Amino acid sequence: MTKSSQEVEKIEQLLADPWAVDIEKLWQQAAHNPDPDKDLRKHITSTSTP
Image (cartoon, rainbow, N blue to C red; front, side, top):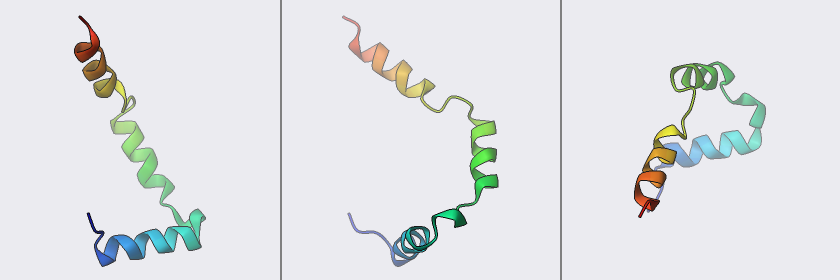
């Protein structure tokens, strides 16, 4: 799987300046999804029970 040039450019920018991450965007995502692992945990428990 290859990354688009935009993805590569974004990764290079973040590596060059890690403090440029949009913290506000991350906070908004966290506010809308307070427990991102909930669905994953549900899936794992439902598939691991005998």
